[in-house]
Image (cartoon, rainbow, N blue to C red; front, side, top):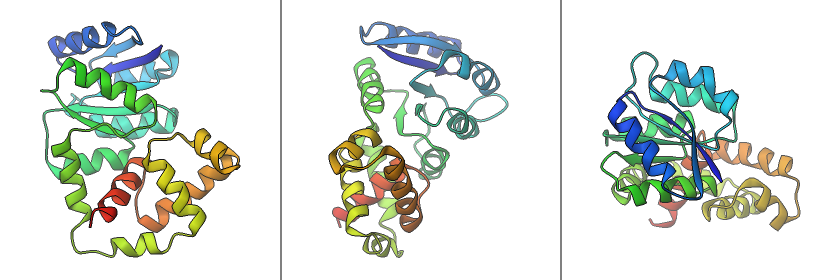
Length: 210
C-alpha cells in the first residue's frame, strides 16, 4: 500500500485528489491539508511515501514546503500538482526536491500512475513539461562537460538512476553499499551542477538526445 499525503488549498480539488487516490487499491490517502504550515506540522506523524503538492498555497509556498519536507523526510517523493507550466516554477520545484510535476488537468488514471511511478523511483511528468525542462538544459552552456567529468563508475550509476531504479537496487546491482551510492550521487550532482536525482536524470536524458 502506497501512503499518500495531499497539500492543496482548494477544498474541492483536495477532495477530488483524495477520491482519485482512494479509488486505487494500492494507494491510501493518510493525510490531506490546505496549507504548507499544516503539512509541516503533520507530515512526520503520518509518514507518507508520496506527497501531492500544490505550488500556490496561502502563506508558505508549495516549493518552499517541498524543500522543508525533504529535509525532514529525505526519502519521501513529492509530486507538484499545479496549473503553472512555466519553466521557472518547474525548475524551482525540481531544485527544491520534487521528483515529478503534474498539471491539474491530468486524468485520475494519470495521477495514480504518477504516484506509483514516483514510489518506484521514477520521474513522473507529462511530455510537454519534460520537453520544457530538457529544452532549458539544452541552452548554450557547459552541460556536456559535466558528463565528461564523470568517472566510468559514476556514469554507470547515473545510467541506472535514469532507468528509475532506487538507490538500494543500484547498490545491489553494482555490489556497493547504499551509503557508497549516495556518496557517488553527491559527486555526480556536483559535476552536473544539479541539486536532485530528478534534475540529474533529466540532464542526462537531454544530453543523450543531442
